[in-house]
Amino acid sequence: MPIFVAELSQEEKKKIEDIKYNMNLKTDYDLIKHLVKNWWIEPGDIASMNAITVKSWLPTWLDNLRENLPKIWGGRDVSELFPRREKYEGNAIVIGGGPSLDFDGRKQLRLIAERYRGTIICVDKTFNKALEEGIEPDYVPTLDANPVVAEWFRLSKDAERTFERCRSRVKFVAITTIHPKTVQAIPGEIYWFNGGIDERMVPNVGQIIQVMTRKTEMNPGFNTGCYSWLLSVSLKIKDVVMVGMEHAYPAGTKLQDTQKFHSRVQMVGGKIIDKPGGDFEIEFPCSTCQKKCEPPKGCLDQIYGFFSKGHNDFFNTDHLTDGGWEVMAETFRKIFNYTRKDIEKETGCKITLHNASPLGILHGDEIKQMHLKDWLQKYG
Image 1 (cartoon, rainbow, N blue to C red):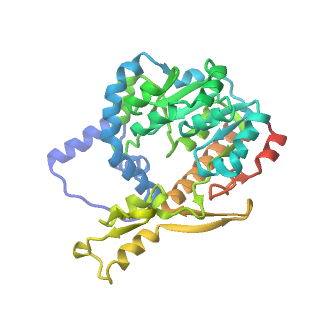
Image 2: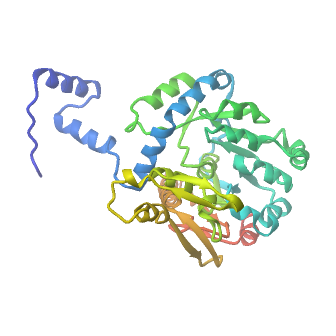
Image 3: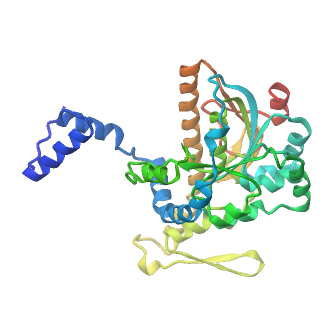
């Protein structure tokens, strides 16, 4: 084991002694162990994505939180929805916002409406679409701080007819940092929660938000679909199936129609110029590029190398995905397996998670693929 020696001033030594005293640590070694265990952010894509997200969005989150505070203080807490039992039981369908929901004329949504009467957790983006097909959701989570989310709660006439039947039962679950326009658009009472922000990235901000809001803190995952499954865990639901959760696009999707294409172009300093007929070209600032390459090959390599095509053997479908979705899928698998093992260790219950999305990469590591009709026959 290496030995570290540091020359410290008396003032620095006094600060270290104060830290140990306040943290109830006896020796310098105890302090080092605490820092390594609790404050080290593991290197890699997941940590990088978390750091970029917090850095990019924290000012917006806090602005939204400030405006939402009066509604939050007078609102309900998500923990009111959680059962007090220890045992995990029952089943649920998580409806995400992926493109496969529109396959075959919304076949999966219509199948859910016709054959399922259990718990339904439907993300905000799909709320309108699900109602139009006759689905009556029990829980509708919303996370995104972007004001565009408000539009997802403006119901069509067909959706409004279904919503009138289930209005009194639908529980809207919202993170405290959603945009104020979304708060106004949500057509029902909100059950609030605070999203956990890694204290190692922004020390104390989570504690401050907790004191300000007095609402339960939950892991928000990395998108509303992931949070919807985490919500099912808090609801003590044993068997869950996901639809619209592929972390990919149909294979024929144009790169410019993906979520990440424009941001990848911006990352290399490029600018997209739209042309007639839906075509486009990219203008690159090669005079400022740090790479020694044949312009603009290096920039294009960075952009197109982020995307990849693949094949889902179980559903026999082709897809297009990107590096961001791959990181999210890896994160989801890790979260599921950590949670699954903890629940079994603490309660003896074995939870299951199936993905019936006929497209994509979110499977493996005990997240098993299954056709929706087969899951409904077995669990629903």
